[in-house]
Structure formats: structure tokens, C-alpha cells
Image (cartoon, rainbow, N blue to C red; front, top):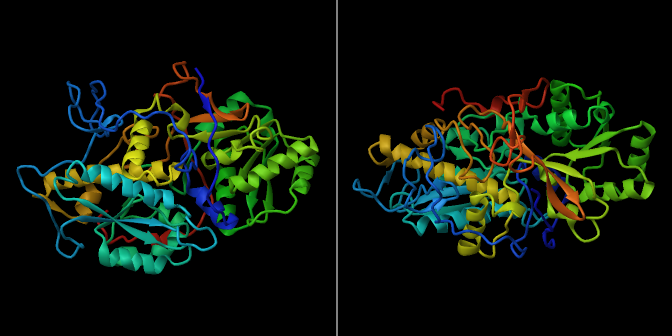
Length: 494
């Protein structure tokens, strides 16, 4: 079975260098604007059939269908006060009549207005959805905008320290700037994403989709190896000539080496702010006989490279990119035809398949109901998964801590979660182990539209509810990918 759909028009601004960095952090599927058409969503409160999930998952063990509000496949972590009464917040942790959650983003950066605002938009919608049910045991959520403006993370971190109980559902492009202040004020974070090795390997935080610097998803490369064993012998990796993007390119090369079967990559740097003429890059690949290429950077630059390849009459046999290229840009009017055959991995429920993924349907319904003007996007999915995890961990903390919400307690409960899908928003992860996900899918452009390529739903390859999972779906990599020391405080319990 295949499903396809076109994404809607674009209306967000770009600063190519900044967007390139955001792209590196994105493991979601699409950058969609709120006015894009979307499949009809099932109500976020619809109860699914009974589940019998093992301990440690985001679905409770039950023999009867849940009767309360749902988010996708999981029972809602929100609701009114219990018999224990409305919880209190530990002294000195920005307590009050609400649980203040800070969502990191960079929407105020003048070079790219609205940068990552979809995470803040999702946080506001989530707060509305949760508060409509009573908040977390009667304690409402309040979202605080931690706008780092790309280069102003330190003052945003100061605001977090002085105003919020926890950081949840966000991320800064230059997230290494948050240290050591993050540790000094005892902050915790349920991060939507992490960019630098410093942040991805830091303690005091957890991610619903871990992104460790020394282990990377490999399911997509395993698929390429099995499907195109000859093509992967002549590889090119194009990357923006910037420290962070070079590090990502190095990690990608190291992942290929760990998977095996890939030829030694030819690394081709380009101007991270974009190139006026991409033809020389195409000619360089053609002269080297490149048959497999991947691109590290932004979709805006990549689509221009793809058009240049079409104009020259040379496209490598396989063009497969990471998750941040599964976007509307690749199929926008004028781009879809030239992008024909392009492939990208994802581990988030495809927007085109909301009828098959209850988590996606719940997300779309939540946005339409509680923040209809907000931006619907892959980063919004990441934010929502992180917020669901925070709320789940907060409830567990209240159970074991006499109805008192305390930072390290919440984080400790979050770190007990060994299986997580965000209610079916994405493939299964193990946040507690902080390991890279082992499941995924391949999307491709066909007829100007995004279409599922692999695995076919219901086939033998579909062994994870729409995903292909295997034991070698994540691999350890070796190399110098950045300093991690400033993000680690060994005196903290978590």
C-alpha cells in the first residue's frame, strides 16, 4: 500500500546558514505551514482498542480500552487533581499557581524571523490541550517563550533559571551556549532536539528521540546497502563549510564506515549561505563517477543543486538524504518535477498517513483546536513528544514524592522510560538508554508528491507498525565530533 500527497505553499523566511543548522537537528518529517491542507484528524480524545503494553512504554498495561482522553495510542497524562489535592512545586524551583515550562527556540533572529517557532506553537497548543483536561493533576501549564534569537542564548538561559520549573519541547541552534548556566541553576530539560555534541551528550536532560554524538541511526543506510550494493561504492557527501555542518558530515561518513559496503566518501564543501552556481559541484561529482550522494545542509540549497543536476543531465543513481529533507520544499511547484526520484529517511509518522497513525491525527487535531494559527511542522512533532514525556514523568514523580513536583525527581522518572513513541507520533525509542533509534522508513518523490517507498505497510519488512526495525539499525561511530565536557556536571544525580 502506498500513500501520497502534495505539501502546500511556503511562507516562512530563511537565513540559509541558520536554517542549515536547524536542519541538522531535525529528525521530523516536514516543515508545513498552518494553512496547508491536512488529512482529516481523529479527535485527540478518541480511545483506541485495548492495549497490553509492557512496562516502560508510553501505553499503560490494561485489559480494557482506556475510557479517558487519549493522545494517539497513549492515555492522556493530563487531568484534574486527585484525592491528594493539587500538587505543590518544590521550594526554589519557580513554583506558583502554574507549572511554568520554558520552550527554547530562535524565532526572534532577524536574519530568519520565525526560526523554529513551530516548537513554541506546539507547546502553546499542548498547554491548551492539557489545561482543558485540568492540567497536570489540577496544576495548569504555562508556556514561557525562551527565544534565544540564535546568538542570544545566555540571556534566554537566565530567563529560564529565574522563571521556569523546567525546559520542555524546545531547542536552540547554538545550544552549547546554555552551559554551564544550565547546571548552575539546577535546570532540567526534556529537549525537543539537540544540535551540538555538548548538548546531545549533556546530563540534566532527556530527549524523546536521543541524538548521541557517538551513535547514529543506520536503518536508512542499511536499506541503501541492501537495495543499491553497487551504487554505494562511489559516494559523495556535500556539506556547508561550517564547523557544525562539517562535524555532521564527518559523523555521516563514520556511520557509513560502521555500516560497511560504502566506498570512501568524497567530501565536497560549499558555502553554507548558498551558492550562486551549483553547476561546478555537479560537474565535479560527474568527473569522479559518483553514483551515490547525500547532502548536509538546508533543503533550499539542495533543491537548487538538484535542478543543476537535471540541467547538466547527470544525477547520481541514488540520492538519499537525512530526515530534514522530507519537506514541502522538495515538492513545491517548480521543484517536484526536478526532485523526481529523490529519497529521504524519516522516523515520524508521515503527514500523508494521518489516517494510519493516531498520534499524527491527535497532533493535527490539537493544533487545529488549540493553536489554529500555529505552524504545523516536523519540529512541532518533536516538541509534542517531549512535552508528553515531561507530563508523563511529572505524574510519576508526584506518585513517589508525596504530591510534590521536584526537578530531579521528574527527570529521574523520565529516565525510567525505556520505550517511547509519543503516543504513536514516531517509531519506538529508548530515552532512558539515550541510544539512537533503530527503526525508520524511506520516503520518495514520485510524480511531484511524497510517497512511502519502504517499508510497504503490512509487508514482511514492516515489523514496527509502519517502520522497519533491525538490530543493526543504530551503530556506534568513532571520531572527534566536538567537545562534550562543558555539558556534563558530574555532581548532578541525573
